[in-house]
Length: 96
Image 1 (spheres, helix red, strand yellow):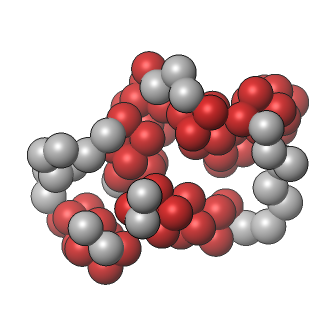
Image 2 (cartoon, one colour; image 1 turned 45 degrees about the horizontal axis):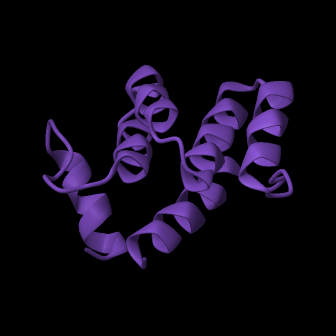
Image 3 (cartoon, helix red, strand yellow; image 1 turned 135 degrees about the horizontal axis):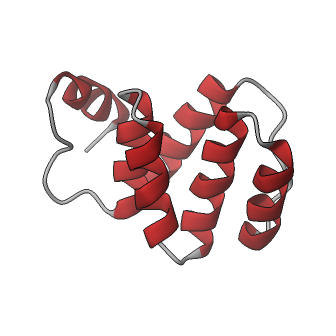
């Protein structure tokens, strides 16, 4: 799936079948359901899950918690617009 198809899938009520937890998290975030997005990210125990978890806490405005999760992911905290971070994450994760 490419980014255009991923974005188009946001018109549906549920994420496309076969998306892993981190992509489900980004999908639910784009739909405006932070709680479902957070639950998906929290259930993924990988560094990628930590990175998406960090992004979600940044969206929430909890920069201290976001910093903790960026550190767990081995990443420098993002500082640009959250929309740009979402797009970058989605492109990277879809390209794996």
